[in-house]
Image (cartoon, rainbow, N blue to C red; front, side, top):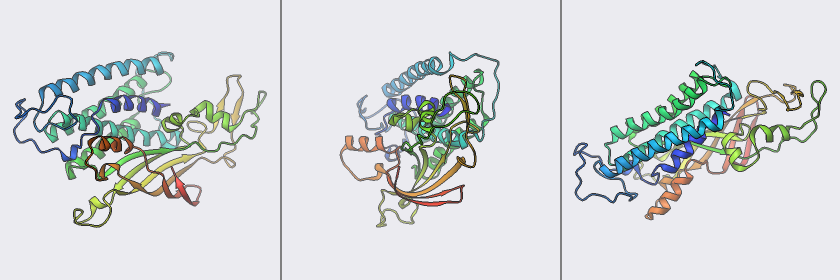
Length: 348
């Protein structure tokens, strides 16, 4: 699962970054990139420094490099070492999994850029220097995955993946350059569908199976499996803060924490490009595309921006920011490529 490899790196970076630091509130540093500070902030304080802090800079750079190296080695051992290596090659996987993997690349690259930016701002870096550092980190982490893919016989270097990585990083960078804040935030949600337990017969000889068994073997069943890699359950969202686009948001009565989210999902995915697979005993299964049509889903739903809920408690801000990559459960309107329009009283 390419998306699972993205998430593996993302969550390691997530644990490192001082995500509670309100980067958009960081004062602009006009004193240059020198290490002098009056007075110097505490090394491990959550508050961003107003000028470059030598201790924080080297702590962040050294820890980031060490963890990146360790995670890259762990990633190789977990996903690649058991597959044959080959010469560097490319693979066009556009359309695989109905492009849910591409939505995951956009989300992952955007979030990695976000965390790297906040970490750079915590060191006291100038905003633009922090931004381009974050862009390099976001693209670099994703490029690591693609290079590993390129030398693995199982996968291949994907230019579509690179394109969606660039979109994710570009979305963050464009908002920072235009507004000095993230008005559109990428989020995810997911709950395991009620998979069918009706026995499915193989194309020839072999043991029957069910869609529930196929999904369990392909995606897993736990909450974290669902969020990480169940393409039938996962929805990727662009959550737009409405108040920030109003003419005078500081005086508007529109709730500053209320967002409108646009989501993308897919259904009936039991294989990469088609619903055909083989089991360990050699049985081949093919689903009738008329009975189990693969389809795309588009959603509209209200959402919450937890970072815009007013509070003076620093650790509460940190806690709320931890929730902000998850879409808030709310009513949703679904449009899908089967021609259906559905209202979900509560969608997550």
